[in-house]
Image 1 (tube, rainbow, N blue to C red):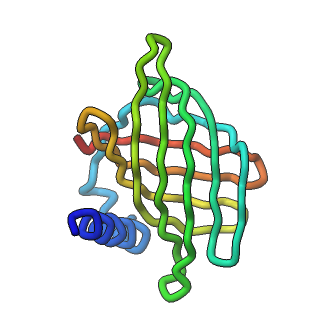
Image 2 (image 1 turned 90 degrees about the horizontal axis):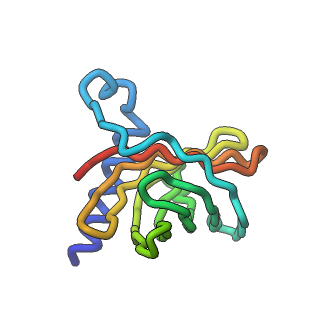
Length: 146
């Protein structure tokens, strides 16, 4: 039950940001967790209702990260619901694990996703992720929630 409520809150937050983002821009200030990370897309699998994107890249404090984004089109709202997982491997042998949910939209060949992320150790991020299908890159901007 709690997971369903968290997903609904995440979707509502994403819809508000996508719809009214400029109205909140003056009041909402988030601290960057780290510098933006540019990842390489390793695969894209498409189906009738969306698809799955996988990527790998160096993400600062999370080390080398492997991640999967599952996108499902919501035709009534004209946006995508996003869910996924990521694992970061650090040089000292430790790793971080994260799960995320959010919403996204497409403009031309660029998909923008807004995700809330729960990471090992109770860290929480708000990620703005841009997938550029022509450049085969995925850029992650991680902001501190907790």
